[in-house]
Amino acid sequence: MNLSHELNAMAAIAYRDLMKFLRDRSRIVGTLVFPAVFILILGGTFGAAAAEGRAFDMWTFVFLGVFAQSMWQSSAMGIISLLEDRENDFSQAIFVAPLSRYTILGGKILGESLVSLAQGVVIFAFGLLIGIRMDVSQALWLIPVSILVCLYGGAFGLLLMANMKSQRGAQQIFPFLLLPQFFLGGVISPVDKLAEEGDVISLSLDFLSRISPLRYAVDLLRGVFFGGVEPSQGAVLASPAFNLAVMAVVGGIFMAIGTAMFVRQERTR
Amino acid sequence: MSPPPIIRVDHLVKRYRKADRDAVADVSFDVAPGEFFSLLGPNGAGKTTTISILTTTLAPTGGTVTIDGHDLGTDAAGVRSSVGITFQTPSLDKNLSAEENVRLHAILYGLYPWRPSYTLMPGAYKKRLADLADVVGLGGDIFKPVRTFSGGMRRKLEVVRSLIHHPRVLFLDEPTTGLDPASRRDLWTYLLEMRQTADTTLFLTTHYLAEAEDAGRICVLSRGKIIALGTPTDVTASLLERYVLLGAADPAALRAELSAKGIAYTDDAPGSANVRVAADEGDVQPLLKSIDTPLTSVRTVLPTLEDAYLALVERDELGAREEAAGLGEAGIVLGDALGEGALVDAESREVIQ
Image (cartoon, rainbow over the protein chains, first blue to last red):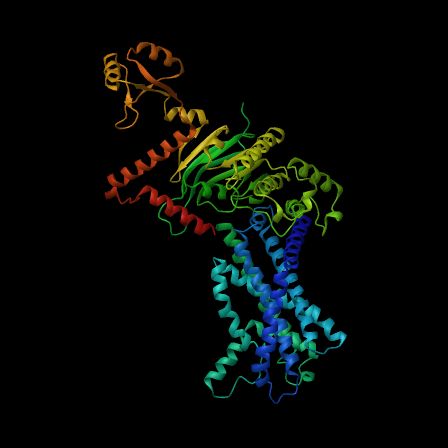
C-alpha cells in the first residue's frame, strides 16, 4: 500500500463529493428549505413555548440547534449514500480501483463533511439574515465545532450504513432515528427540565434524551457559542469539555465498529 | 511453449446466501495473454456473477482465481490494478466534465497526485489526455460536461478511461447495450485496434452473438456450468452441421429418389415440402449431380454462432427439465428451466445490490 497514493485518492473522492454538491443548484436551495422551516415554524411555536420564562434568546437557541442538527444529519445521510453509490454512476468505479477500503470510507466521510460544511455556510447566512447576532470570535468558533459535528454525524451514518443492506432500507429507518432526536436532543426546545422526580414517563424521556447522540453535538455547539454553561443562562446543558469527550468516545466507537463491519462485508459480499 | 495464462479460473463456485443452488457451479477456464475471450449465456446463467467475481466486486464461495499472477483471495488490490472494467451500466459521473472523470480515475489508480484543477496537473497528464481525446475524436469537448455527450461518446470515453492505467486485461460487460448500430461498429473498430496496439486481453460478455464471432474463444454458461468452450467455429461445427436445403415441384418424388439412393434427409420443418441433406463444402456438387428429380430451389445453409448458441442453451435447458422429471425422487427439484433462470437472475441482482 502506497500512503501517498491512498491520501491523494482520498482527496480526490472527497473533492468530487463537494463539486457534485456545489454544481447542483437545486440541492443548494434545498439545503435551506428544511432548516428555514424548522427555525421559523417549529422554533417559533414549540421553541417559543418551551423557552417561556427563560433568560436566553429563543431564536439564537433554535438557530444554533438546527444549524448543528442540519450538518450532523447531512453528513450521516451522505455516508449512507455509499450504499447506493456502489451500484450507481461513477462510484462503482471507485470500488474496483486498487484502493484500501479505509481510503474509500475516509474520502467519503471527508467529502460528505465538506458538503455539510458548505450547507452550514448557507444556513449561517440565513441566520444572519433573520437577525441572529454574534461577534466575530463567536462566528469563528463555529468553524472548528462544525467540523467536529460533521465528523460525528459521519460516524453515526457509518454505523447505520454498515448495518443496512440497501439505501432504501436506510432511508426508511433514518427518520425513526432522527425525528425523536429532534426533540430529545434539544434541537428546537430545551431538554434540561425533562426529568421529574418519581414520574416514570418523564424519567424515561430524560434517559432517552441522554442517549441521543445528537444532543451532545447540539450542546457542544451552543456551549462554545455562549462561552460555557454559566454565561448561557440555561441554554447549555453541559460543559463543552464534557460534550467533546462524549462525542470523541461515542463517535470513535461508532466509526470503529462501522468501519470494521463495512470492510468485513466488502470482503465477504 | 505457450505463455502462462493471464486469467486462471479454477473450480470457481458461488452460492448466494439463502439460495438453494450454486449460481456458478465449479467453473474452470484459462485465458491466454492478448486473447479475445467471450463469455456467453442466457440471463441467469452466471455470467454477471462470474464477471463480478473476476472484477473483485463479489467474493467467491469456493475455488481460486488468478489474474496477471495476483490471487484474487489474497491480493485483490493487485488484481484491481491489473484490470480495467467497462461496466454494464454507464459509470461516468454526469456532474463532472469528461476531463474530470478521466482525472479522477487516474488519481484513484495512483498515476498522478491529486490537484484541484486541470491547470495544476502535471504536463504528462495533459499530454496523455490530449492523446486520448484525439483517439475518441473528442478534441476540445473533453472539457464539457459528460451530460452533453451522446451514448456512443460516453461508451468510448468509458473505454478510454478504463485503459488509462494500462491494464493487462480489459473486462467489457455488455459494452454495446443501448448503442445504435453505427456507434456499436465504431466502438468495436476502436476496441479491436486498441487490442492490437496495446496487446490487451479482452474479456467480453455480450448478448449480441455477432460480436462474439470475432472472439478467439467463447465460453457458454448455462445454469452456472460451462456447456461449451472453444473457438466460435469449433463450437458451431461441433453442434450443428452444414446442410443443403432442397425444394422440388414434386416433393414426394424427391423424397423417394433420396431414399432409393440411400441419401439421408430430414424434413426442413414438420409438414414442409423442402428437405435438408447434410453436406460439407465438398459434398454439395456431387450431391446435386446425383439427383435427377427437377429441383426448384437449392440453398446451402451454414449455421451461425447464434444458431449454435440457441441450440446449446435449448438442449441444456431441456436436459435440466428431463433431469428434474427423472430425478424427482433424489430430491432435486429444478423446476421449469426458463422460470428458474429468471428467478436466479432476479435473485443475483438483489444480492449484488
